Amino acid sequence: MVQVSDQPARVQEAMDEQLCRALSRLDTFAIVSVQRLTISNLVIRYQAGYVHKSPMTGRSLLRMFSSDLAIDLGTANTLVYATGKGIVVDEPSIVALNKKTGKVESVGKDAKEMLGRTPGYMVAIQPMRDGVIADFDAAEEMLQSFIHKAHQRKRLVHPRIVMGIPSETTDVEKRAVLDAAYRAKASEVHLVDQAMVAAIGAGLPVTEATGSMVVDIGGGTTDIAVIALAGIVYSRSVRVAGNLMDEKIIEHLRHEHSLVIGERTAETIKTEVGSAYPLDRPAIMEVKGRDLLKGIPRTVSVRDEEIRQVLAGCVSLIVRAIRVALERIPPELSADISDRGIVLTGGGSLLKNLDKRIQTETNLPVSLAEDPLTSVVLGTAKMLEDFSLLRKLAVSVLN
Ligand code: ADP
Ligand code: MG
Image 1 (cartoon, rainbow, N blue to C red):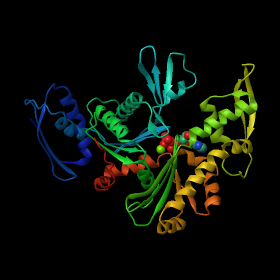
Image 2: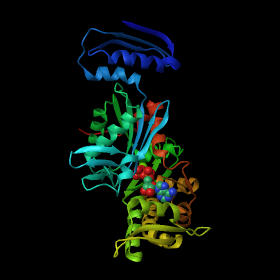
Image 3: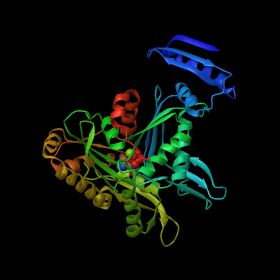
Image 4: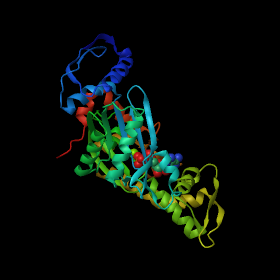
């Protein structure tokens, strides 16, 4: 019997490590009693010898040896935040699958490196497309791999997980995400709406009666939401965001310059010289690709003005969706938004001068979240500290 009492929380982690190692040596063990007295003092009693078969009891206890995790499962990027550590995973949502063996060869950054360079039998899969799970198996592999990475591949960890999911996720997809997280040995999984957590992460006062508008421009979708009193008053998702912009750039270079480029090059062009409104200083970029007809490498230069035109269609659709949202919400909330303005988040909001363009078209103040790429995961992480807020905001799943 091991008895630990009145230990300050600071030393808890070191203690956990030791106990974890001791417990992992036992094939079977049971928890006779666990008492959490106060936040800073902990009394735990473990007793070996009695075989308890309920996995949940074991998991619930083992949760104490893990950091809880907040996960932003995005179309383009997945981020994982671990309590006490901060953001521990920030990688592209990509899985490289070996078709010969049916095995996943790599996930995240390593898999993105392979994108467009893979031999015939290797395929790079993006499990999330258009804000929804397009490939369930790949999504599960990816999630498990990132959860293990977050815990530095320790085997005996059972974290509590809070995950942001797009508002239009179906019940089947929600269940798939829950199952994947439980199979990755989570002790508890809670789902929250991405728009809500993006707003929290961007510092908006979501629980107040005043309405806030957040526009999250990601890889697959742009999600517009108006939030008041911890509820979503209006939400709409349009399938126009970063990926479509990249596709438009690929098409343009092919048709206008007879140059074939890959997705990664297109994304670089967008971030380097792409914009939504004229720039103060003109920008130009040399683009390397393959000549469409001759099949040999060739370089062309593109200017900001040219790329702005290529992206104009996508930008207009985003602006139009924001306008529709402004028309549909109750007048009181419109008044709040005209005072406080619109907050942009998500990687797509980093397109140069997009804020300026939206401001010009809506006549409303527009601001960018402090770090648009991390708003969702940081907002989700707040739920780990505030369980009463989580209870209020957790998305329910029908069986
Ligand atoms: P998701 O939540 O769908 O995973 P993110 O919020 O991570 O998406 O944003 C990813 C998108 O943001 C990608 O399409 C990426 O190309 C785009 N992006 C990232 N940085 C920039 C930038 N500086 N300018 C324009 N687009 C950007
Ligand atoms: Mg996102």
